[in-house]
Image (cartoon, rainbow, N blue to C red; front, top):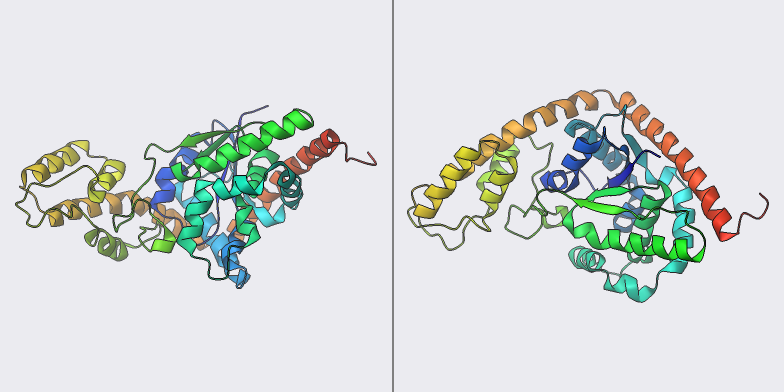
Length: 332
């Protein structure tokens, strides 16, 4: 069987640079080496939007546009809407018997995301079961590799544990997946927070126009210990230089800026202006491709439907094998 990738995102809005370094660039790079499935996890997104599920329609469209804009090839990659593959819900229910509540409570990714969301009325059960749902997403397509951000590693380990338990209890039907983290494990937010996050409003989006991008860059946190442009500054842990390292292809320029920054011979304004220029150049073709697809909504719809149709055929076959292994294929 051809090696397969499953990855994806919850459709909570447009994608940002953190998504790009975390997994999007790996998806683009590997799409011709692996049979690739990219899941838009709208069912999981309902844990944040259960009171207003109608917002997911636009979000699904926006996420698909971002996928196509960064270079995912619709002739090769299957873009899949989670709610349109009902077999995923069935496998999630079976997996629920293989995981304890205590295990879910210890999951650091879930704990951190609960903290970020600050659920006012308690945590929905759907959110607690997010790791189980994600395990079903990965295993139903028999994915070998899962490109993810560093924060998602506990989720992949949870999926691996579920696969091991299922295969030991029933039969070796499922594939134990491996995670692949991007070259930049975690991109800090523009406010200096450890992670770029929509809920923290510290993102640079892939679709941001130049004027918005400039405002975001010029307002970025730098070295809090540096009072004047002539003060020696710290490069390590400085978000502006983290972004330079990630997105500025002119490595000689980056090294020169770092050296001058350490000596106190360049100000934050110039460093940020150079970063804006590099980011704007990087994002320009992405914005252009996005605009081209946005002008063809019917074509985007066809890409989603075709990808989901192909994915569901794979899911249906896996579920036949799962039911047989569990001895619940009663009338086959």
